[in-house]
Length: 69
Image 1 (tube, rainbow, N blue to C red):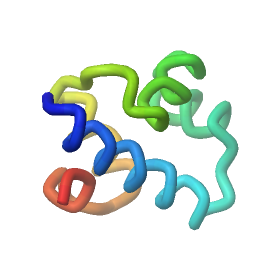
Image 2: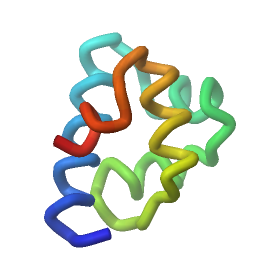
Image 3: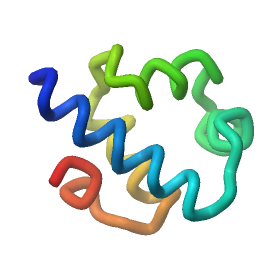
Image 4: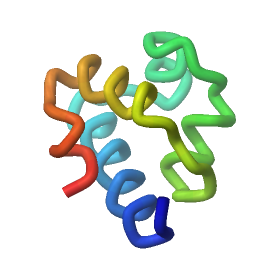
């Protein structure tokens, strides 16, 4: 995944989380991800699998495409 795409994904996840007034810890628990993984994801410092993108999209009730556009 390119750095630009990671930044877009990171911003979209952070925005969705903030819109729902969720802390990183709450999101990580809900998704079954490590809290440090969510932190790295929101800072665009980690590559993510399609499966995880789909899991996040389903949690927020959006499409996977919405997270990366």
